[in-house]
Length: 228
Image (cartoon, rainbow, N blue to C red; front, side, top):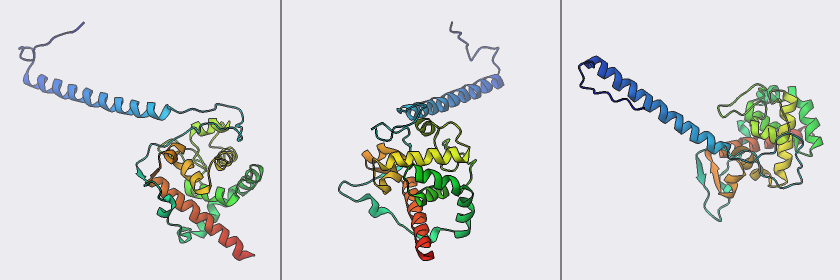
């Protein structure tokens, strides 16, 4: 049923008319915001995942997450990594030790189990969360390695705020990615999703992430070599 009101009716005073217009505009605005958010969420949900169980790292399966981020498009035949700036001076040694040392047991255990460079794991943890096991990003990434819920399902892990489970999921995902890509491209896929690689698009956030991780990893390698 459609009800028709005449705004020039005597029952509508000037103040009532103004209130009606204000309320109507607010409803239109809220509805528009809701539809925009709904379309973004639907786009983010169009991914294929493996829910539960253990991932078979030998199989070719689609990854669970592609970030929707502003990006730069890399020209064809241009080495994307010419854009990167590796600088180990960004590392604050004391902060790095405090951030990583509480989780060394799990880092060592799962890096050895899945044959992943432990310094790479340390660098990702430091970059992603600064060692905070309870960090939750605005995008919904969780814990030390900032694992997305879809990635956790992909890895068969349920409690992402448990430090050991989080590191296990992250290292398993790294192990899967390194079978598909070299290390810099693996970090690209980790942060932005493999579709960005296929489209030759690197978000600015991803560029900074790769630079930070590789810089920290380089610092850790240098410190270890200097200690020998």
